[in-house]
Image 1 (cartoon, rainbow, N blue to C red):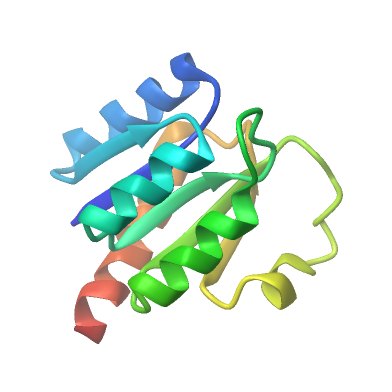
Image 2 (image 1 turned 90 degrees about the vertical axis):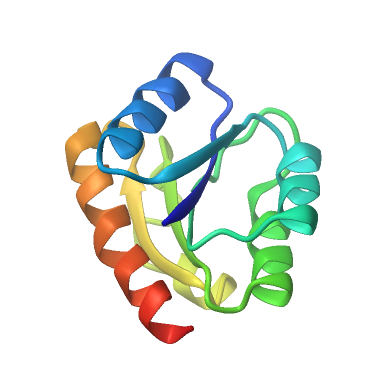
Length: 124
């Protein structure tokens, strides 16, 4: 399973990356919109873990580009904000499969990535 993490906090991104790699995932960690789009231009991803609160760029254009370039890819949004707590993220991003608090334990995030990654692989 190929996973792209887009997270501006390098420490948190590395923790998530390590948890996913221990489960056998191939993981790419990017910190901003431009690098994430460049990665998706050249590579595929089964699951994208995407922080809605990016410091360097915006998250929704990344999700839109992924939907166009890799339609089977699933996006798990994470956020420190309560703005999308009403579930409206699912109206804004067709490939959204979850929206979690950024403080979600890494093992729970990894389990969700595994679950949705299996679904992406089955769609191929």
